[in-house]
Length: 210
Image 1 (cartoon, rainbow, N blue to C red):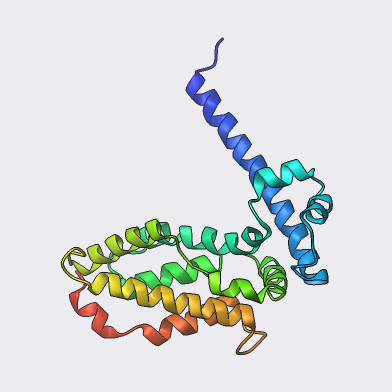
Image 2: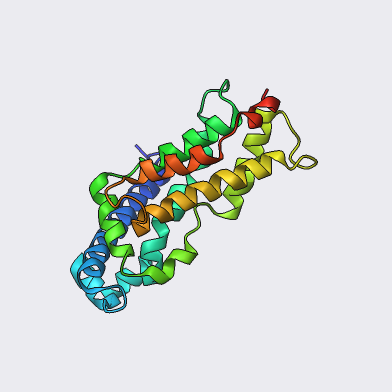
């Protein structure tokens, strides 16, 4: 019996995506260990590929630059915030729902993975200025979702955009504080992000919530 081509294609894509994700994860783990031991600048792409058990050509199919190995987890984390916001209870005020979505994303990685990433990042402090929690297209979607919760038109009312800007800026500040170990070095990423978000939450955001 001939399999339906749509189903076959779906499984092929799914398997390919999982394989790519595994290779990417292996490369990242290898890179973080090398960065933490030898420093970001001292580690070569060839060394990372060898430690990950892949060829240099395979490495370059999955990684654009060494910098991306450290910055990509931030982008990946930020990309999921809109989906988490959509899943929050409709009864939650906009600021509470957005803070909850951001905080949920900060807890999506295990403690060991996060600490490996932070240890690697400390060897590349020049990249801290390039940390951006969310790409522009996802930021636009967040403004739309927040505006809906506030029953406001984002085209004519800047309030939803301002709330998104403030909350993301606070979350990025908390993330950077954690990466630098600027407060309590033992504080977890969620603790740092939650403290930063709490500082900009204000009941006045809730007066226009539907």
